[in-house]
Amino acid sequence: MSDPAKPLPVLWSFRRCPYAMRARLAIAASGIACELREIALRDKPPAFLAASPKGTVPVVQLPDGRVIDESLDIMVWALSHKDPHGWLEGDVQAGNALIARNDGAFKHHLDRYKYATRYEGADAEDHRAAGLDILMDLDTRLAHHPHLLGESERLADIAIFPFVRQFAHTDRDWFQARNIPHLKAWLEHHLTHPGFAQVMEKFAPWASGNTPLVFCAQTYNKACLATQSGSVGV
Ligand SMILES: N[C@@H](CCC(=O)N[C@@H](CS)C(=O)NCC(=O)O)C(=O)O
Image (cartoon, rainbow, N blue to C red; front, side, top):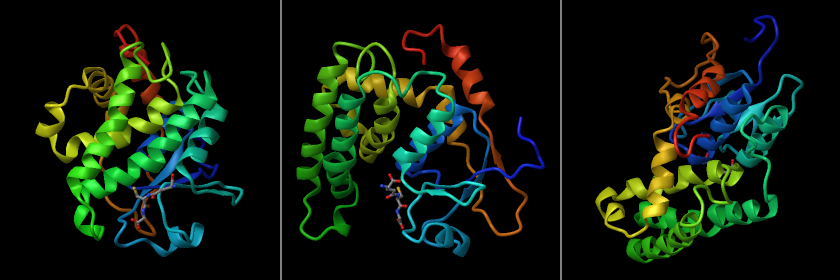
């Protein structure tokens, strides 16, 4: 439990942002209590921009004044504190390569598929096909083991699935018709995990003077324990 006298790290977040999701998942797993401040991207609070002028979520503001404003750095910061599921273990180089492709090429195609009108000359179907090529590669990996890097869930699984979720939800019928069964099972596992529901709880945007909202996911790990008997339990 958090000590009410001790200031908590502040987590600036946006519920539907895949970068923020992966940061919340890692913080939840670590058990670190934070003050969650949900923001609206169209109406960023001055206090948020003062903490991180680049204006992207997620951002963690530590009580000592340090600011962590990249989702992967937030994940590593949180899990370095406590990593109950061993997400930082395994083949880190291979995991980082998968994450780099996700955050680079896959995100590029995802944005131009989902928001084609925002990108001049972008053809949504071309970008969807290019995104699918990457997902087919992930599907091939997942044909051999339940997680991207082997028998155990790692940072790459947690860092990548929120983006695959967004791709899948852009046109659910089209996605369902694709022959990528292993990837679909992997995605379903993450989406139905009780810990995911917990980090997707809805909150109104933060306003100065609000009662602090403690994002403490002690319950995340309890939820994990409850599912450990499942076939691909965390
Ligand atoms: N590289 C950053 C990217 C974060 C990012 O781009 N987040 C989006 C939301 S999903 C954002 O805040 N965009 C700013 C905006 O839309 O104004 C990270 O990993 O944290």
